[in-house]
Length: 414
Image 1 (cartoon, rainbow, N blue to C red):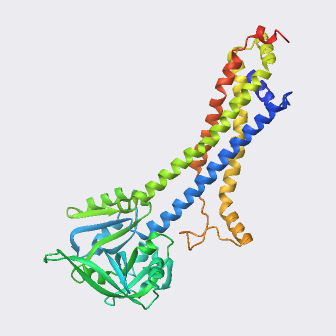
Image 2 (image 1 turned 60 degrees about the vertical axis):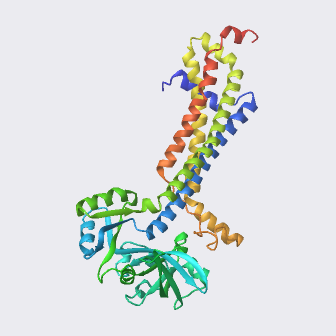
Image 3 (image 1 turned 90 degrees about the vertical axis):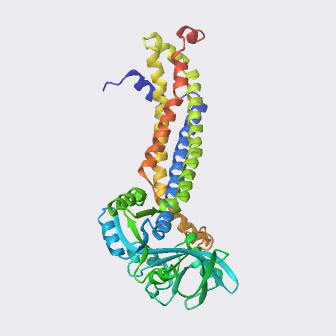
């Protein structure tokens, strides 16, 4: 079968046992270094994707994807919910109220965000029902002023179901101070744990109790909370629904309250990816060193090829092929091993914990108790593509040096 001269000689140089075993060793280490760099990048970025996905599912499963409100409390929230459900991106809608205050218990204070919810509708827009560790969400009865608190709050105040604590809510008044605190005695009816900061900053009460605290009329609600299929489309979807509802309505979405957190996580992933890319760059520099030594070792072969009619372009292509083959093999091995490790790292860490008896990710210290991993094809393609590109660029200078070899000079002492 016909093969171009450059491809034939380049692949032959790669397979051949060289007289200089040191060059072979450097070539092997370049290939191993490239494979390790690709493997490390795939595993680390997959773990970071897993952390981001876990945090997204927990935090964004608790906070509203978007809320729809009017200039005044809503008398008929069902009509607003029905209009929102007409959008194909919306998967659920429920009444919602939000206020901020302080918990007080035996002299200890803690700031808290109170969400007023309808226990029967909340499962359509939140994952809270799946993370109850004490009590039930349905125990939030209207008029009984029950509260569901997070596990961190319960642990801080040493509370359990049936205990009572005081909620202090600021209220504007005509007094000289301008603000008058309102105090309300609440009874703990449940405790949730999602494994995030919300366990210590969020509490839930019945929507009717929240409306009464906001001085709304019976049956009125502050806003409507919606859940979306693609939560990253929240700003666009919320704006489209408000446009359909008409004047007097406004929308808020999670990117305003939690967007900074996920922007920071995204930037962290980008910066770590760039730092790990340096490992691949070091391996690419090793390819440069390998090819320079190969060119010096093969000066006589290059001169003979030139005298037989090979052009400088063909000589250059020979060493570009050799370096690209080294880079391709290293990238493929690293890519395959990286995907394999990333897919099984969670199981391996769990096995290590069982064997050693140590908890690497203790739920008492971390928001998660396992090492998540999410392999994304886009990351794998970008990493392997970057490795192949750097491997190819690393061949240019040594190949150019080889193409400039003068046959007479190279054969003078042969």
